[in-house]
Image (tube, rainbow over all chains, first blue to last red; front, side, top):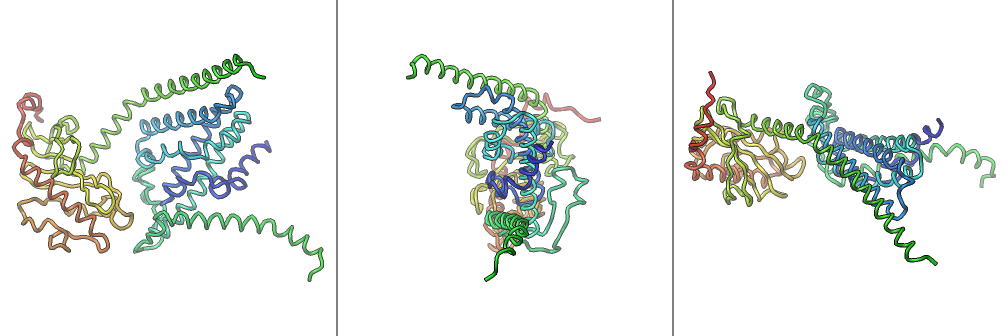
Amino acid sequence: MSQFTDIAHNGLWKQNPGVVQLLGLCPTLAVTTSVVNGVSLGLATALVMAAANGAVSPVRRFVPDEIRVPVFILVIAALVTMIDLAIHGFAEPLHKVLGIFIPLIVVNCIVLARVESFAAKNAPAPAIWDGFMMGIGLTLVLALLGGIREVVGKGTLFSGLDLALGPQFSAYILTVIPDYQGFLLAILPPGAFLGLAGLIALRNWAEIRKSKPSIAATGALKPSH
Amino acid sequence: MIMPETIIRHASKTAITLMAFAIVFTTCMAFVYQVTKSPIEQSEAAARMSLFRQIMPEHLHDNDLLQDTIELPPDALLGTTQPTVANIARVQGQPSAIILEAIAHDGYSGDIKLLLAIEADGTLNGVRVITHKETPGLGDYIDIAKNNWIKLFDGQSLNNGKDGDWRVKKDGGKFDYMVGATITPRAVVAAVHKALQYVEQHKQTLFVAQVDDQHNAPMEKP
């Protein structure tokens, strides 16, 4: 069991793809203009990552080393295409929101990275769990970044929720700052870089603070100058 | 020392593995494509129809808009370089309005693709922006999702104004715009104006009840 807890911890915090591995920055920066966009792409990525890891892990012994990467890319591209078609066919409203982002997942190196570094070496169950948790870790970062950019840039939260889940959800769209004129910088690409830098700094700060007590403890033993 | 045969055997084994993967996954994709084909077509038709409904009132058509199409050759007034498909609205077989696409090339960034519904008498029923790449938060108010600005065109026509009116207020016309983004509305106004001129010039060919259609169309409602 502890293996699964470790995998979850890795995906969500220790090896978080968004703020630690810094993989998958293309969608991270491009899509996070709102919470709904960020979460939607994050969940789609989690789905693809779980499926890709699950598809590669059982056949990992049959793939010769030399053609490892082409085979992985083939598998990922095929899965993304199938998921895209399925969403388009059976969940049209969701496709309206996610449509342009799903093909982007193919070029997202986080998917290939997890297939290559985890699924190719582990059994199917942990591999699927790893793909999923890494995806959720990325989703959290996308949600936070989307939230920051949306509030600062447009003064709202959860805009577009009605498009993703249906018109009855439009009541959940919050206007955080009424009569806000908007702060364009946050919506444009520089806002994404600044926001992500802020999140990385925040995570590093939290990590350092966590390890501080031990430093302080060892430091106390030494004579002070 | 590796024998050439070993290399060849190894290479062919690798190639066969790659091919096997390609075949298996292509088969999977073909299967999913077949299964989702008709739901996708239906949902796309529904999406297109809901867009039509925004700019085309019910009383102007009793035909199937999606089926009743004509092809428009590329035209400078429409800004098109490829043939486009226009939908004809009919009431009891008589053409009442046309839905056509126009492209504005002089937006702030990239082309602005418009969908217009124009009645047979030259009145604009409505305009929607289909795609655009204008600056978010500045020029994107032409999009109905952000602002109602585009509804300024509802009910306008060539006749109810001099040519000079078909400009934004800053240029002496009658169309409002938002401070800070004039290029975008200027492009849209000009494109709509030109599309109206196109329909005016081609009235005879666009709004003629074709013989074929008169045979097929009359599905009169009780």
